[in-house]
Length: 436
Image 1 (cartoon, helix red, strand yellow):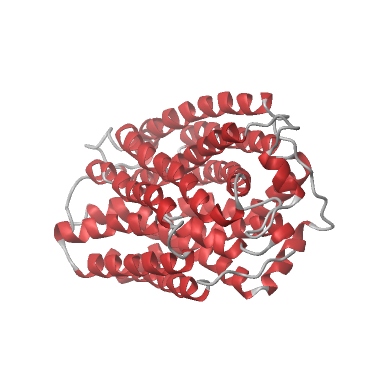
Image 2 (cartoon, helix red, strand yellow):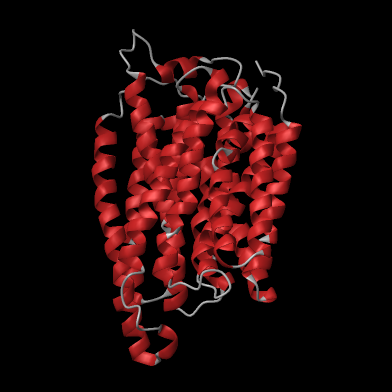
């Protein structure tokens, strides 16, 4: 998703990124590093699904207000993706990765003043800074894994890397549910007032703080390791006349629709993940507690994990466009089943959407980037900025839920997002011409 190569040809920077005997660079070693980055930012992103019901209870929020957690987090993609791509061009992948990890660490540490003040707005600031760091890491990781191999297998390779992202999104919520949602379940902020309510918010939010402090310590160690290896990768930095020149790529219909689909996919995926806990606790679905529902969030992300490992192999045999249309159609069917059914079927159908999500992001990215050639770095920043869909679509979904009084009806919006993605898969089923 960034520097230097299209789907049909290598540039000098792609060769430099993969390394050769003269450079003494070990490409498999770099792949392990990139897989670790995918695991980290995927896991931390998925913790939002656990934090949302906790903050919703602490600050007695409606669905739309609770979704501001995702809005604050994913807004960073819209603001920092293009600058992050510019940093990569000037500083290189490894130094930029270290910058992103330190920014994430700062975001985690900001949960300390957020808890001390017991103010929802300060939590949003912490999440925004954390999102900025993850944006930088994503702008580094996606193009780097795309470059580490043959252009024709980029979709398969990126899907495999995304599986490690899903591994993080599967593991982190299970631990987060126990640490964050497991305590003080017999008390509710809605029953308290004044000083007692403020004291409860400070005490209850400590579970969130302790979780993110542990992450901050781990990020500091990883950033230090990355910095010591900042010169391992030999790169040719590419100068650009303007950071915003990348947006001229929007003149290309295939690329532009791909950017739109990235916006819609992330928005739909985050909307469903954010609603899972509230959805499963409804009396007409499973009627379980927040913690029990939270314990099932990993099934949503675990579906994506399994699907990406399988999909990385299938995409070597099946046209990426046709595969994208197929899984998007499956997501629509599952949403319709969940929205129109009750009980166990409704809950499991919604969780199964995670399996349909599995290959969507990497396939959309590969289809949109195909044929960009030397402008792949610029395209990376534009595509990453479209992840801001995670800030907008969930808020709109929450607003629909509040006004309609039905989480079932609110699923209509993610369903419409998947419909556009299915159409794009059909449109982009043929290879794009190479931009040399």
